[in-house]
Structure formats: structure tokens, C-alpha cells
Image 1 (cartoon, rainbow, N blue to C red):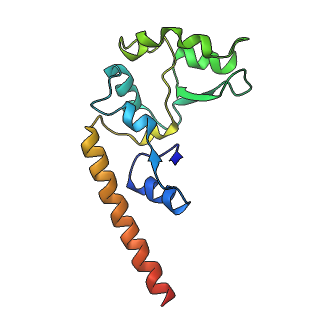
Image 2: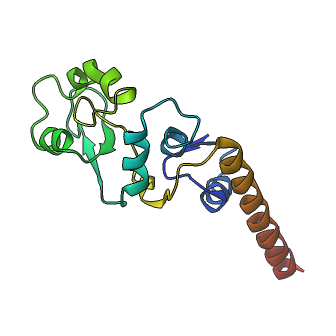
Image 3: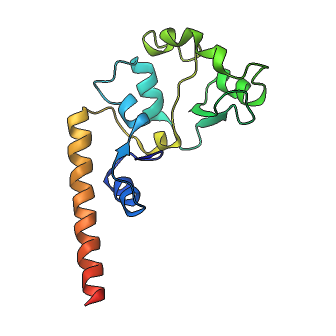
Length: 148
């Protein structure tokens, strides 16, 4: 399984070329129409550039994570506190379902900068697979010709 930076057929093809047998699309699926998270979070992903995320818990304690840049995450990036960022997830319901982007940490990868709209999952997957197949066919014919 490959994860991180995957949002379309091109990035899926790259992952498969590196040996993956499947892909995970966290940020892309958070921003999908069917995702139960608040529209504010989805809109923040769509509006984000690749540089609009921060890397938290870089030096511990706890696991590192990437999140959308907000006032809260900008402060946490510099001063995570002695318990890291884990305590900040206590109010995640207010973010997930209430849309308060400062209540908790809106996890998101840099791939947010490549997500341009909130779309239904079926559309995302269908378009992704079609692009993946086109790329793989093109690569297959190009390299099969080169070997002949």
C-alpha cells in the first residue's frame, strides 16, 4: 500500500511503478462529497496550496503528523507543549462536525494543494482509474517498443 500525495491516476501510476499494489487517499477522501466532516474542512483543503500545511510533533512526543495551517497549528509547530499535540484532539468533534477549524487539528497532506473541488467518491475513483489505465497503457506500449 502506498499513501501520501496520492490524489489522481498519475500519482497512483507512480506508486504502482514503485511496487505498490494499492493506494490510500486520506486527504482526497476527507474532501469528498460523502465525507462526514464539516464543509469548512473540505473548503480549507480545496483552498489550500501545497505550502498550507505544517508538520507537527517533529521531535515528539507521540507520532508526527501533517495538518492544515491554522493559527493553532502554526503555534503548535513552534511550541508543541510537553505532551505534544495529542491533547489538541480532545475537541476534534467540534472540528469534524462543527466546522471550528481552531478547535482541533485538521489533518491533511500537502496533496491538498492539488485538490481543486469537492466531488463524489464515485467520480474521483472513476476518473482516477481511467487516468491510471491511460498512463499505464502509454508506458507499456512505449517501453514494449523500446525493448523490441
